[in-house]
Image (spheres, rainbow, N blue to C red):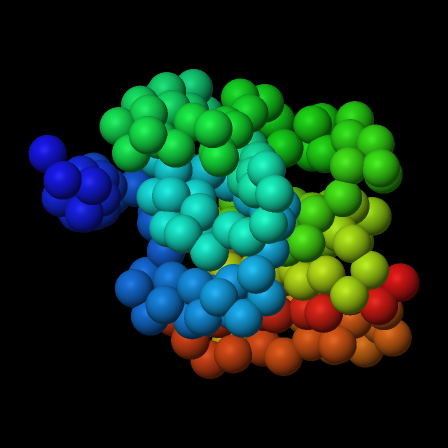
Length: 200
């Protein structure tokens, strides 16, 4: 099977099984950023079935390019490994089966990345931002998807079920917009995409 057919099937299966993957409009926008940034190393927080990492790999640049992507859920992790193998990208994409917070905190600051992409547990975005800031290269980029959390962040949402995650995402946006380390634009694309250029 051709690579584009395999990728199409990965997307189709993910959508059929209600696996959260990047919306087409958000993906296209992020790929444009990667095309311009030409990253050599990308860190992804939240692999799901590997769809975004596979797409991102098209725009890796330089010697020994690498994407490291972290997934806590064992079923998702296994599926991601299978999909990445089917696309013959094992040499470019490394899937880590671990809790993202534990794994990130254990990474040494000598292990830095050009781009860090956050698309995992919404209630943990503040922790992810802290670790991403530590691990991104100076002048690197932190991208976060779903910062509007299906519109809750922009509304007066205060129901108990998602209150903590909603408030933390509001705080995430406030920090990246006000802290001088970040030059941030929040784009009204998909469910909200935050792009922060980091100046250490």
